[in-house]
Each structure stands twice: as structure tokens, then as C-alpha cells.
Image 1 (cartoon, helix red, strand yellow):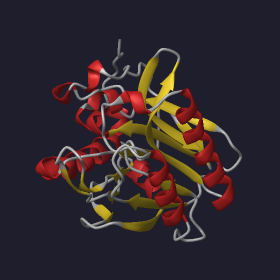
Image 2 (tube, helix red, strand yellow):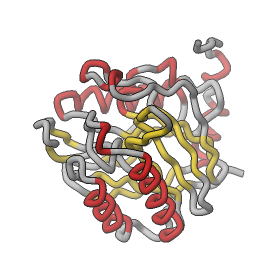
Image 3 (cartoon, rainbow, N blue to C red):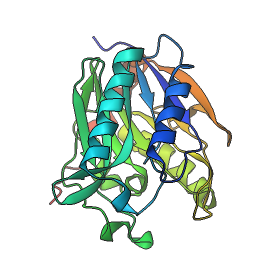
Image 4 (cartoon, rainbow, N blue to C red):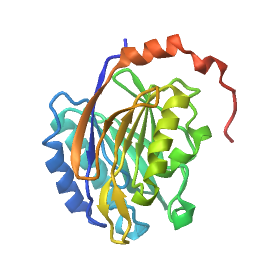
Length: 258
């Protein structure tokens, strides 16, 4: 039986291209997360900020990121997820990492790279829709710009929760809020959006406004534009009951993504 999931979102102002400083910051913030937490969500590129300077991350830094996340997960006895630049083979990825207290590593590579800023010329695109199983929950990972593409995120595979890790600029904040709600409504699932705050080295401002949205598109928990932690419990039975009472999923179109 699906159990309630206790989550915490860490919304913070990350140091630009400084992996070790961001490691230290996350360690500090994790020590303040409520003890009953099952899952912590970090923003996109939480080790560097949204940079396209891939040269700062090699195989050693990539492995250190994974090992640090494993350490956090074991130390605080919770799963932890977020995206980071990862070098694998000859390519760099904007990779969503999800690590359990048992040391299991799940990954998802960002499918929709932000071509407007040239991200598609720096990182390799992901090709596979991933589902993560944790404590009975089916979780769909996504990263920032993916949120604009509903076909890619369509819930025809039964997931309960969508997580979006983002560096979403303040200039498009209203779009962020609208898309999070839309993805929750159309997929009849919980949606968690974890964004950063502050201003990066390129002068881009981020308002945060990380949110927990229920299956009706209603914000259950919101963070303002300051650095903080928010914790919230996702009620499993309410989701199950709603899907049975209002089974929109039965009338969904079938399709194939090539």
C-alpha cells in the first residue's frame, strides 16, 4: 500500500561554479531538515549554478558529486535528488540524480536543452523517459525547461509524483507557476518544483517560488524568494481516491515518442 511521503525542498542561492562551496552549503542546510523527511529535493545544477562552462566538471568532480550525495543520503537517512553537470565518456550531461539511503543511484538526463541560451551545444540530450520507484511511489524526474513539453511528461505510465529541479528566471516566474499547475492537473499527480534564489554571475535573477502542487492544480506549499527549507507531506490515499473518483486517465490518447 502506498504510504505518505514526507518531502523537503531546499531553495538556496548557489555559489557560481564553485562545487565545494555548494557542497558545504547543502550539508549545512540538510542538518536543518525535519527528522521525519523521506526525500529532499535540490534545484537544477545545485553544484555550480546554471553555467555552460562544462570544463569545470570532469570525471573526478562528477564522481565526487555522486559520492557526496550518497554520504548525505546515508548520514541523514533519506533519499536526495537534484541535477548537476556530470561528465560521462566524451559527453557532459545536465543529469538528475536520485540517491537512496541504501546507495541506489537513479539518473535522468535532461531531454529538452535550453537552445535559446545554447545549452544544446554544450550538453548531450537525454533520450529516455525514466520512472524512479521509492517507498512505493512512482516518481517522474524532469529538469527545468522540460516543464514546457507536456507530451514528454505525459502520465501514461502511472506515476504518482513529478519532480522538476530548476534554475527558472524571475522574468518568467508566472510561466513557472502556471506550468507546474498544468502538469499536475493533466497528469493527475503531485508536482514538486524546486527552484533557486539569488542572482547568478551572468546577472540572471531567480525568485525561487518553489512549490508543491496537488492533483487538482492547487498549491499546497510555496516558498517565497528567500533562502529556506520547506517540508510537506504528500497524502497517498487522497491521490488514490481522487484518481478512482475522477478517472480522466481512462480517456487519454495513446501515443509513441520517437
